[in-house]
Length: 90
Length: 141
Figure 1 (cartoon, rainbow over the protein chains, first blue to last red):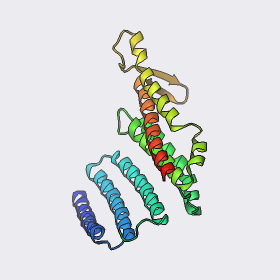
Figure 2 (cartoon, each protein chain N blue to C red; figure 1 turned 135 degrees about the vertical axis):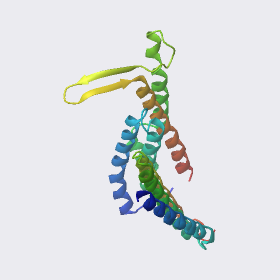
Figure 3 (cartoon, rainbow over the protein chains, first blue to last red; figure 1 turned 90 degrees about the vertical axis):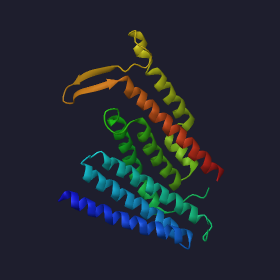
């Protein structure tokens, strides 16, 4: 039963990852793409956590923590870039 | 470099910086036998200080650090090089790992080792190198 649940969770996360990548490639403006990149980071954190449950290795949760911290830092970096008037439609 | 005026970012940084440094120390000390170690701990700590740099500016970050990134780099290299020397006195090859087990009342035993010293050296080198890159980029902006 746990295997089935983690498999379903992986499938949902993968489907959302594909949809976000489509948005990243289509995204008409730069802020759209930045939001898509942040969402990819959030989904990857979810993937790592699910993988940690599926393999029963608790240490992988630390990888998810580090990933979330770095994604937060990247979000602030992008926000600064947009604040300073980076190209809006690039 | 335009400094951020966001109150939310300033307040969040003041909360996150100590937590992230604590997490980096946890990763540093857990290393060797389990996931962790000097490199990833140094990256997390450098990320914390880069967050401070994003929220404030370069001079206030240097004031907060109280040491230039180059000094951290040099101190780390010195520690990593020194950690190999104790093995020479015991007639073993340079950088051979040595372990001491110390008993403390109430705390139990603590394992001290030359790999720990080497890891702290790697930690300081990674913080120093990443911060000198980030600060140079921030000053050039």
